[in-house]
Length: 297
Image (cartoon, rainbow, N blue to C red; front, side, top):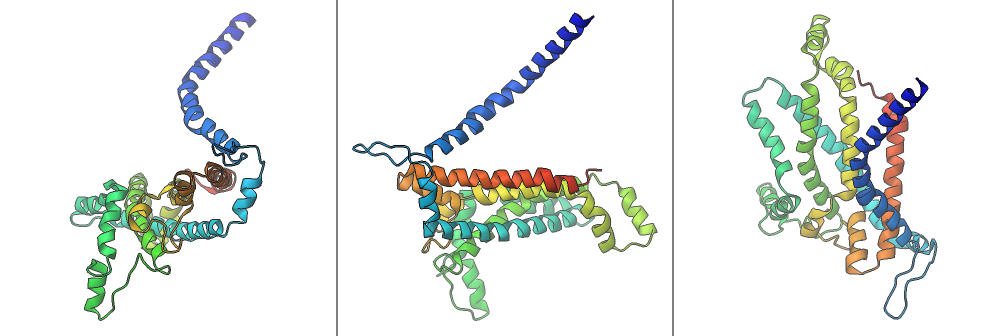
């Protein structure tokens, strides 16, 4: 009896590992190994033909922390995330609430909201590049109707980052709306009927019932928005290329610039390792703090 029980446990363990092996192999090849290789690369110096790379420990990180451009880029990315994440989530929720209500042409409204999402980021950036053009752009033409002068939205340090953020918000809000719309359709209509019987207003129903039930979806969207605030740089190549004067340069663009424009792979690896550490800390905060405060029922 004991041998049969042990054999069954062994068989279940083998089956479990076989089921996990495809995901484990994919994660090892495309996530774990590249991350480890990046950390190792960050500990070596930049090599040349005459001077091969050598182990320098944490010197690349020290040079990085002494680099004023790195701190400017980090601040830009922080501002970019602080604007794009809450605004895109709030717009997505508002659009989902409207698209889920009983309005005329509801299917058309949903399609219109989701259309920017299906556009490639490069195409969206070219579209907004026409909007931002100083001489004949749509924004300046609208401003001219009210007597405003032309504004070089992408050519001024004070407006370039905000112009890039507007493109991201326009692109992502419709994508996040789909998740909110799907979550809203899972809320039983009996809850709304009970709230109306109790005399609750629409605001009370939204605040006391809808928003708590949407918390798991909000947490999921928040994690995706934080990741996107670091990884979305396609539109920078079209709109500003990080300028003017690095005012719109983000961390991933700076990593690309060091790795493929300046060929300084150790510096790029050190920045990548820092980004991975920050994202890991945010993920730990999500699972240890936010996840426990989220009600899934």
